[in-house]
Length: 514
Image: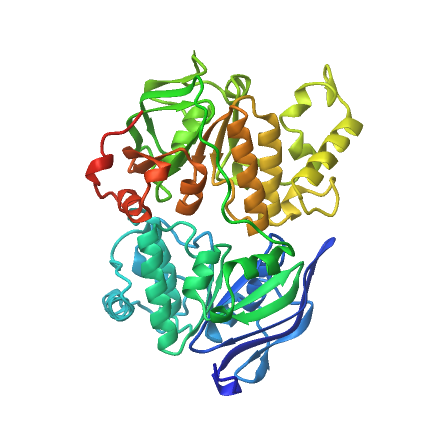
């Protein structure tokens, strides 16, 4: 790379950002050049997204400066950022479902007249779409699009608005392997045209495949910046967590026990009243992990909610350890032995405004020593919470800290600690390692395997194929509320699984193995 300032897109100098009780970034320097992809890595709570939110105008730094084209600039809002050619695609997309692609792309832009020429806007979008090979229909409504297509809309919106410095937060978290490859080609086309791209990701395979340079944050500070061609996954993982990380876990052959879960011809609707599961049947046994593969939005969330009492069914039945729990309450599901790590950790898994300790005790509080009758023992709850905080390496200023103030990864650890501790033989785990750094991911995966080896039945919903293949004994592939096939994990081929996730039939897997 040419380090001449004319090729430098942005320089961050001595950026410090504080929140109550936390220093998210401390004197961080970052350089990104036009014509390169910079990967930003770090543990949960290391300050990656905070740093990029400063650059994108969502936060303002407490100290330090942003230098653009060799001159200091003040970025006080996302509008300031886009005026300076900086745009960010967030992990959770900022789109309005009821509007078209074109309407979302121009939403909030300053109008140049009293009317908007949608025909011209659509043609301009189509031109950009064709140039970068980002196929999206400008007239389509957002609710009609897949998650991968919605991400393309976010990228098109930034390109339409003239961004030449693009930030993508966990860009492949909701994509099939084929969609991830397509995204890599799009990003490479952008940087070949002279744009600068920063990706925040915890997937080291993608760092190695996508990026030109890698910057590693640890505890809010920059510990290293290296060329991707001069490093590897093992070295990067060690930089992130400060110790050696093992990527392959030894998995013993499953000792299959009793039938733990039987879902028989289940039918249910999603939140829009559309069929989410259709005649859905499978079996899960004690001592095994059944992985569930699929692009987000194909019925995985509804399946987990049906089993855990959060969603009613209109047809069929659900049995846990021989007891029917169809249309039960969440408490009845818990009493039947079901623990649930939900995909929406803040909306479903946690109570954001109460303390970490109280969130950790949300299931155990009904029994001694955390309570006696109707009276809670706050000393026991505090001791219980501190023990789990230590075991699961939860980073929090104190056990009394409201859980909303923790990083996303540490919020996830709170859910994991509570549900794994409370598990009574069955665990429904939806994206249990999403947003976790490699060290925490390794710990969670070992814990799941330990639970399985101890006889637990685990339904593992994940969009990470490597994770599914590594942990599962069988993999069930879902598409539009149906089972495309159930594959022995040791026979799984990622490309074939990816095709099934996209709705393609792979003959040898079409007969679901129940």
